[in-house]
Length: 106
Image (cartoon, rainbow, N blue to C red; front, side):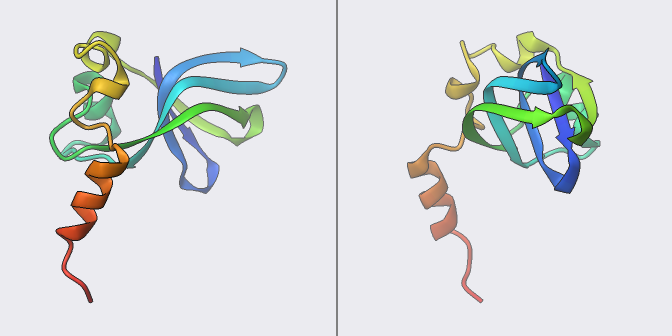
């Protein structure tokens, strides 16, 4: 399991493998908000934190030339709840809508 940093600012987390010039990320979550005080290394080692926001993304295929960095994750921290989807940091559509209602306009 890795955090994958790609060009244009994309950051995903999931299970990775290399196939024919592509980094294939399965059970991928796009990292919308790190929620850390010590960067992506903290997220990789600690798993999702209270302020981390992850969006489900399914399977992602990133061209090899677009991968900037891979950070090994402590998979036990990411799967302690059984899967990434059951993480409290998982952003379900309802959770996202609730979070957006809390943001002041303007």
